[in-house]
Length: 210
Image 1 (cartoon, helix red, strand yellow):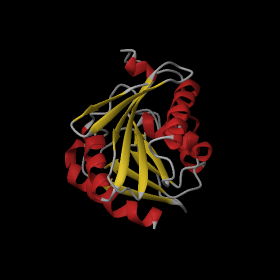
Image 2 (cartoon, rainbow, N blue to C red):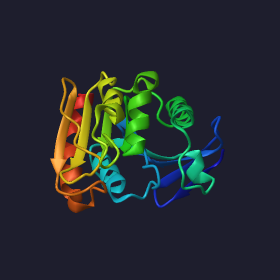
Image 3 (cartoon, helix red, strand yellow):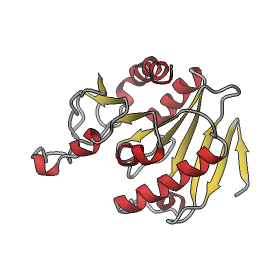
Image 4 (cartoon, rainbow, N blue to C red):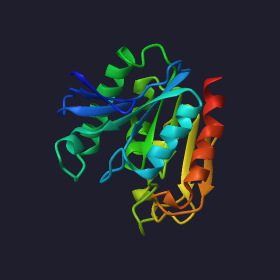
């Protein structure tokens, strides 16, 4: 679909099997890699941590695409089931990698539910790394193993950074062989210390594409 450019951001409408999605593309003039990020279940691409990370990645010469899932584009707040989210996300990532982000090493990620989508689809997308902001390890108060989303993290075999608030009611993921966990002050929104969030991401990005 035609692109709509606003203040240095190119907004692309991309057809998916679940309806149209939107990609907000912050393109670097001479990028070394691409970072594609998804939003939380009830949020959008203007979440403060996503904005902060977009700026941090841009300072490291990354082109960044923020993806609006079709249910949000359609004006709904309740997320679609996981398989539909994954299908729409994969279609958008494939389209960008065939077009505007062609030839660039691909990193994927997102905040909360968007991080889960990125983890579940990382292998299929060919991502070289995954960035998780406020990964929801479990529902608040539900710490039993049966309700854990830990398997989604463990299934990712490429380098992974998790940035998590120290008071996040959705839990604290553990570090792992390919997984770095950085704890910052704050809750699930990560608004408590956006500078620390940016610093963690800015320090990690160059190492996974060098």
